[in-house]
Image (cartoon, rainbow, N blue to C red; front, side, top):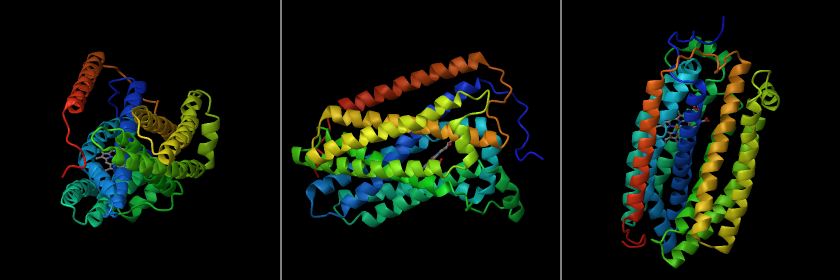
Amino acid sequence: MPPFPAVDPIPLPAPIWLFKLLHIVTLALHFVAVEMLLGGLLLAVVLSLFRGSAPAHVTARAIARRLTVVMTYVINLGVPPLLFAQVLYGRALYTSSILIGAYWISIIVLLMLVYRLLYRFTAQLEASRTAWPVGLLAWLLAGFIARLLSSNMTLMLRPEAWRDMYSASAAGRFLPTGDPTLTPRWLLMLAGGLFIGGLWLIYLSARSTFTADEKKFIAGFGGKVAALCGIVYLVAGLWANAAQPAPVRALLAAPPPGYGFYRYYALGGYVWLLLVVVAVLLAAYVGFARIAANWLAWAGALIALLVEIAFTVYRDAVRDLTLLSKGYDVWDRVVVTNWSVVGLFLVLFVASLGVVGWLVSVVARAKKPMEGAA
Ligand code: HEM
């Protein structure tokens, strides 16, 4: 009997390539926000330990003030890829979500806790009180949410494990262990957090709301963190790739006939590698020279975005080819495109991008107080 549930008889209302494109774009943006949260929070916790250093305190507080906003992006940019993933991979993703159901649903409570703790962390920094225990707790909970997401995204690729898990308990109370890809994949996201967090500091170092001394401190610290953690991120990426089962690595190198386009997808891996190396060199330059400049800030931000896009593309190829090797072809669906709905969706999508752009421009033009002011 095939391990996957029967396909929904209702056809898809839009071309599969469109769903996949929107999925990859929105998921890459979710990953940018997730990495800023995971890395920025840990860096703010570390900086808050240096209570005698004024620039360290100002930097920790500046990051913390932004983290509650970053959290809204983590959540809002998580919803679209969840919907697209359910459309494309529902038969695998729903099954794995049910198998870890109790943990999966607990993410909602954990998210609210993290949110609450982020506000408390910021308030304690504003009041110059000891803040690191609250910040660390928020980071541990966010890291656990990441672990749950990695668990589900890897369990959905292992239909061979589903029957035994469900026979052992139908209550959704098991977290899968024993998948060699799970821990490298989770650690890759955590290492990526510190790397992107460092690039975020390079970006912040060029903001006019910091004094010249603060800018030097932020550029020096952020640059060194991004350079060092970029190397760790690179190693974690190679490890996560090497941990993939041999048939999947073989398919990535030589996709089966009819699926040759995955060769271009797999190029995302090389692009990712190249971008991380460029970012490490740029960050090392910024970190050791302690230079804060607008062009370096924007270059760092652009590379961070491109790194996450390349990573998401490659990750998508790994998932599709893993599922293909187990009999699940994401392209094998009946499509009856409802062009009027697709057109309306695209118009609203572009309009909402315009509104967000306008909001960002309003924030950018607003007069802001200096970060060091009490
Ligand atoms: C603190 C909050 C969050 C953290 C730390 C986090 C972290 C992560 C991580 C690490 C992954 C990648 C897992 C892997 O592939 O190994 C991921 C994927 C994902 N996250 Fe989040 N996430 C958070 C919140 C959310 C929320 C609120 C949503 C949705 C409402 C969401 C939706 C998704 C989806 C849909 C994916 C995977 C999609 C796919 O593979 O197609 N996340 N997240």
